[in-house]
Amino acid sequence: MRKFLVVMDDSPEFLNALRFAAIRAKKTGGGVTILGVVAPEEFQHWIGVGEAMRAEARERIEEHFKVFSKWMVDKEGLEPELLIREGEKATEVLAAIDEDSEVGVLVLGAGATGEGPGPLVTQLVARQTASMSVPITVVPGGLTKDRIIAVS
Figure 1: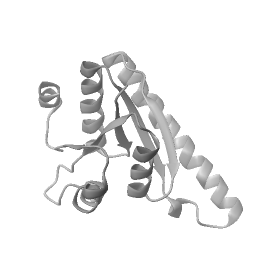
Figure 2: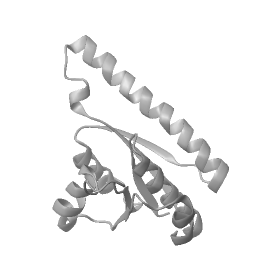
Figure 3: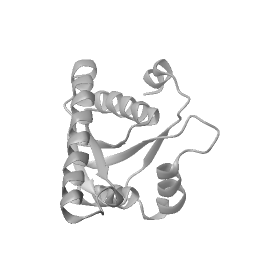
């Protein structure tokens, strides 16, 4: 089964990317993997505090996933998979793609402001494209829900 990999964060762009991936996965008989990345700087404090912060970050990702998973099941009839990794976001995205041969498309949401597409899109598209083993779909941040449905 081909999977669409979506990188979870707190941005509205993530919601656009997730909606696009869910609709495409349903139409093509694929699946969706939601990747949550815990950045190393979130827990590089004292050892005991760092472990507590790591656990809190993972818990926050799991709670967000529950909300998005319920939405996908209710709206698209798909049960997404959660993958949590620790490290630098772009590096972990590439590693997740390399480790799962079923990942067929990376779906990223671009920023809606005029300040550029966002750091992850810039880093992966502009700097890593040559080493990518899957296509990247960038969902423009300005697309409405109806337009995303129409183009998916």
